[in-house]
Image (cartoon, rainbow, N blue to C red; front, side, top):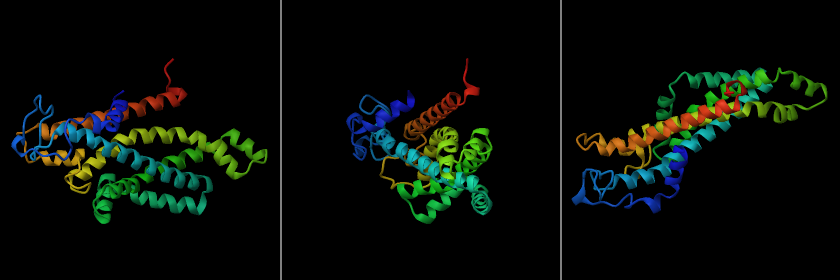
Length: 258
């Protein structure tokens, strides 16, 4: 329900926001939450609620796009490595091991700093930093599934490698990839907010939750500037984690409750 609510708020942000996300009111700057501004205003007099609503239109698509791209790339590389084996497996997994040696946030920071600031570069950085995790998972699942009896029977009946991979192996690997991806959406939103907090996201004037929190660190007495964007990130991250746990319980018969 929380995820659905945030998606609805992001879609209807231009209709629901009481003010424009860039509209400034210098006279009303740093105003506390009131009936005029439900969540207060920032240092430039911009309405916090309006900026949070519009920020959801950036943070949620970025988190989803980064995770989907990382999952697709990692599943493709890991699946082919586990299925083909030998040299491709060795090369792909050594590259994955090398990238997994770095903390994902630090690696994303380095990649973003090299590519330059911007939303697109942040998505690319998160994708590049996260695909090895999905590659490792996909490889392990493929190695386990390819030894199952029904796969051996399919080969005995004359099925080709492509048919076995698409018909018998991929469907049994997909559910675990989807569960991990769902769990990672909240983490991706948090990572994107971290990049923006450090100035490696969109420009400061763009309503984005991480940059809004960064703007509030210089105004600790005006607690609402950083608190409400932080609560938005918190609620969405927890919600996606719960969705991921629920999907895991639903897709794994061993975890279903009687």
